[in-house]
Image (cartoon, rainbow, N blue to C red; front, side):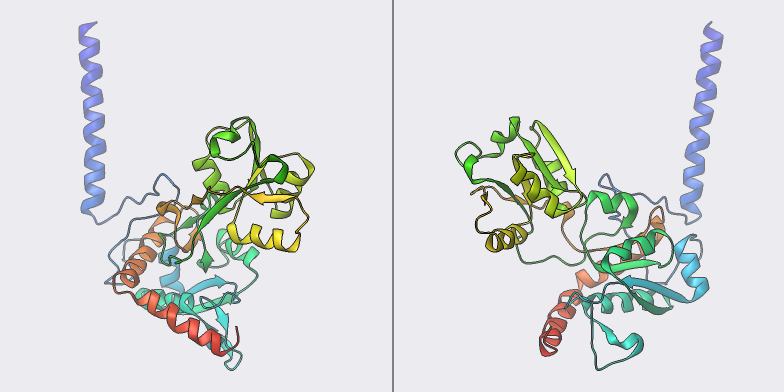
Length: 309
């Protein structure tokens, strides 16, 4: 029995040594072991000073071979991406995000092709391989992170980002704090930032349902199928202003601010193509360190105002 145990331990030691040697060999050969973090986005970078590395596969190899970087965007979100009607062709797509796309193409050593489309299609285009990247003011959500690879954040709004708790006015005296939701049914829009905030910050409730649209979220409250909803500040302000007799209100004093880990607009790539996102993060590091993205944003904010956008 002792001999069998010793032999088993010896075999295990050999296997562990082989694994360590394989990993060390991969690193020595210049191959990176690419990973997502626990939130399913990529927050590490590679050295981009020499352009696309020779030993990478996937999207980076395909882009280098094609000589073109295809970027999906909805060009109606000034100052980040919009159309200058005085220009034509690719030149008409302007904005701080488009400048970022141009810089990525330059660092890759390829041409840029901007592919305009509806916002609902940009992630699909990337997931299906029709475009290499989506750069369109994309925020982090768990649903997006499950469908595409997301970069680290590159633009951080100065305005409050997060959510609030909306209830029926008749419950104003009984729902005054997050603790009061312990025996309540809450709802949020599926795939939204507010869904992520609710999942992170509200840990005690009777039921938490995700609904497809914000209209369904409000209707669930109005119908009594939910007791509270986690909604974007600006959205609910507009809803109540347009429906003053709806009987809904925001619970005062509760603000679900967005965790720093989830803040910032991000770039999307095909799920599983981690080397591509490591390269993108290298470019993002550059524009954050030198403040270039904010300069672009400020410049195109003025540009858009001049165009009446």
